[in-house]
Image (cartoon, helix red, strand yellow):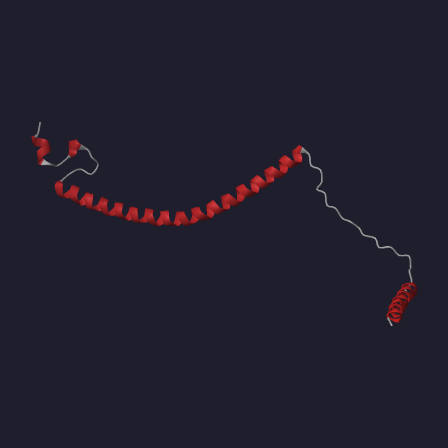
Length: 126
């Protein structure tokens, strides 16, 4: 019985091998071989002058970006400064009118000429 079992297993293996051989010969081989194109990107050789020019261009781009950013900040700051200067101008105008009224009340010349002052003290003091 054991011998029949070994014989059966050997026969099954032989049949499987024959089937595999028949299938492999049934598929036609056209002799085509697959070609694989490899693409290797190597950066172009640059001279020192070309590298310096590229570095200068990158530097100028960074400088222009920085300038644009600062100019946009300046325009917003300029508006704040303008409103502040307008308020200072109005305050100075108020102070100037008050000073003019005080000078008129005391009789002081607004041009600052001491010889033409109308003050009684100035004419009596030596």
